[in-house]
Image 1 (cartoon, rainbow, N blue to C red):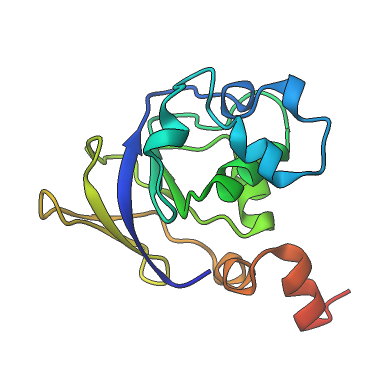
Image 2 (tube, rainbow, N blue to C red):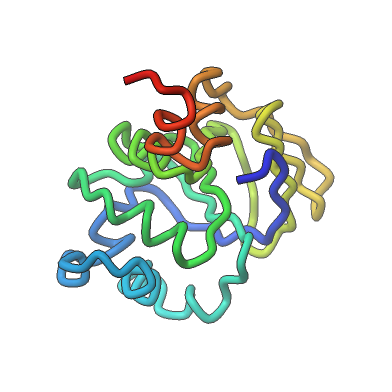
Length: 164
């Protein structure tokens, strides 16, 4: 993970649950590429054809609600999503994403549109919409979460920091 991310926005609404992110019938595997092939297929079957490595998924309120399915952020990351921005995240999805090294930022008042080009700076918590010129300030991530993201996830962070 780098501190700076630049990609196109793929925008969705409120209450996108983990079953919509990765349907349960595909979660019986450890093959992350298999998960990636089916990410968001019930919500937006064309998502995988539009997604380019490094793009940003943008959502409304309560993104990642539903089950505590760890495969949901894994599937997004494996598909090439570089970060997820939402007005608000379900807490278990938020922590699962941080734990695997997928950057997540809460911006309660964003008005990002489909296809907008975004620059995300995780350290400052700013998102610049290159299309509209607007700059958004995300709710700040605690320092330890930034270090976990910069390490590539919780396992790598713990290995590097020998905090166990």
